[in-house]
Amino acid sequence: MQLLHLDTSILGEHSASRALSAAIVARWQRDVPGLEVTHRDLAGLHALPHLDAASLAKADPAEAARSARALADFLAADVVVIGAPMYNFGIPSQLKAWIDRIAVAGKTFRYTANGPEGLVRGKRVIVAATYGGRHPVESGRNFVEPYLRQVFGFLGIDAVEFVDADSLNVSPEQRTRALEAAQDRIDAMPARAA
Image (cartoon, rainbow, N blue to C red; front, side, top):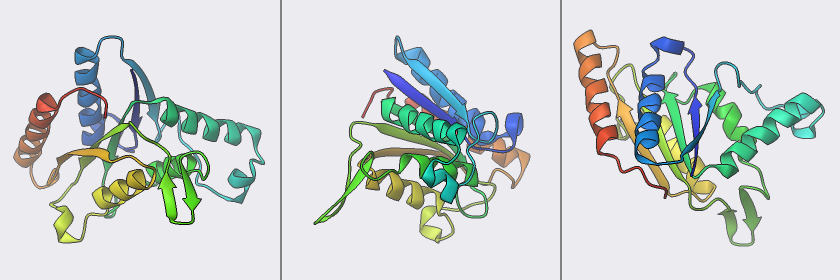
């Protein structure tokens, strides 16, 4: 089984989303014998530039190779684990740059007479979402979860789960409580493909 682990936080070792995504991956490594993990740090070593005309035209061979690798990593994975902090009510731009490389007509979706059709099936996506304040989806201030559900659903993936920790910047005690509650959800999560 293949697991793709993406980190997108710019905070490095101080990142709650990185800690949670690492805990999810560790859980899978413990419970799934032979699990192969590919880790990509989209805010560091594996950063992708924002999509532009040159990217689309594949004008830069190195950039084209990075884009092809991002798509190949995604297509090969049975499970995708994403660390996604909220920045200004949405996902980090680093994650958006990756999404722009995997949402490819003819590869991960296609247009039909009846509308778009996702071509990616049988994958499970687990998002470790972190919020400095309280931003439940129903508040209308949280565009992380609705956006990622929309994107992956568009590609054909219905198995999208969120392990979230909110109000992390309210107080040190609240941060501890939120991260412990998220860890409890990780411990209770079954390690299986979609």
